[in-house]
Length: 262
View 1 (tube, rainbow, N blue to C red):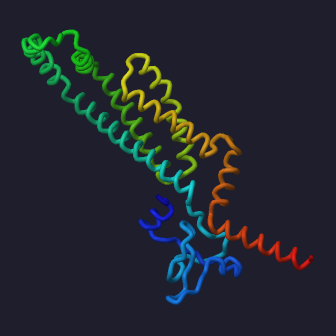
View 2 (view 1 turned 60 degrees about the vertical axis):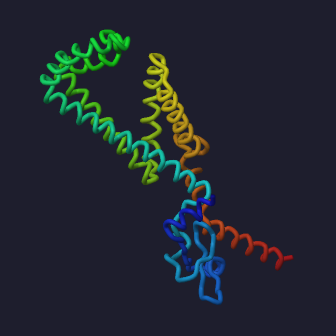
């Protein structure tokens, strides 16, 4: 699938009329149905007036080709961060609610859990040594101050996930750095969790986050990798269709000059 055409189909074509005559001629065409302008994203000629106009230097840098694919990947990562952030915030809110009614839940736990023992004995489940029951017991018996700090930590983490997702969704450079640092700091914890217990979910989470770190570091040229920010901006300009047309116009002019001089 051509991502350029797919995005143009959803958002519409982005045509631009530069004031420079040579570029204007390359991006404009007269047809039997009227004037047509070349889309900066997909390269097709579109009937009608251009959506924007001005000097070539002021033309928007439209993500296309690999840049468009990178934008889609970043926004998929942003959606994952938004989802995680909302779930963590919900967990933090749940801990606060639990903390307010902790005494009632403790009584229910200590009174109701033993009632399940005859049933669990019949199905062969050792209720006393159950990991699930032990985890619940630790939570309900935790101190109120401990639960408060857990709730604060969850809320802070959830907010950080939403900030990270916002930066990635808006395709901001600071969002890419934020995501790289935050994801890298979480890798040791995920590796430690695997040493305690290996599950497919933990393996998948680790693989996704390692891939995200490598992708951000290499593809987005963070921390000076592959030329850093300067090379990243140069690549963006090179991928702009208008920049390509401008380079083609300069090359044609140089060739004509060489022929005339010869």
